[in-house]
Picture: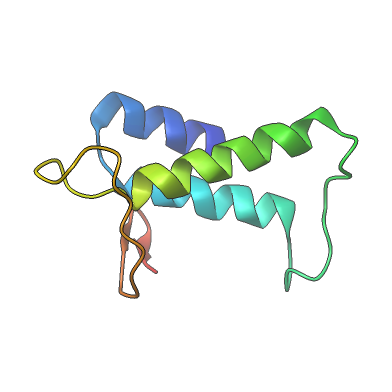
Length: 86
């Protein structure tokens, strides 16, 4: 789901799917309460999932188009996701 959400947002430019991709990647890496990893670090999917998570967070929290390019704004708030808000 993380890869599909990332692909979808690249096709539609709907930023909500970047954050959804990050949520899916995090859920795969740290299921349940986040106390243990599901994928062992030696599994090639481990690095891919981390890369997807990092790209999705950076793109999902990037400043709107009218701001300086490549600026990420880390601030508390409610963010739109395709399946609700977070």
